[in-house]
Image (cartoon, helix red, strand yellow):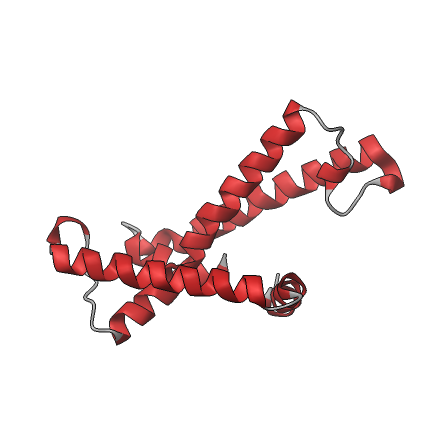
Length: 145
């Protein structure tokens, strides 16, 4: 989530509350992850897979979990790219007006710019061998606690 912090801070009504909101968010996520990890270990023991869904039998619950995780990844992809989009749009001279202040030309420019950028990213992800391994390495090296 570090990449989206400037965007979140920019749209907060009271930016001074950011450290409190950040601490509460990280605390909540920590509790959820620790709770789910403990439940998985209590259920499957040392046989628990890195991806706990691999331990869950094929049924409607597992399918629902996979669908929800996929939706999360798609929405997070767009959220994480917002700061990059802002930089690219700024370099291309597309103004960052908000809401109803945007002209149809601005909206069209932003949609075209973002669509081309996402198609490029997907293209790179598809043609670069071991892209997933590269992303895991970068994520592991750049995330800090």
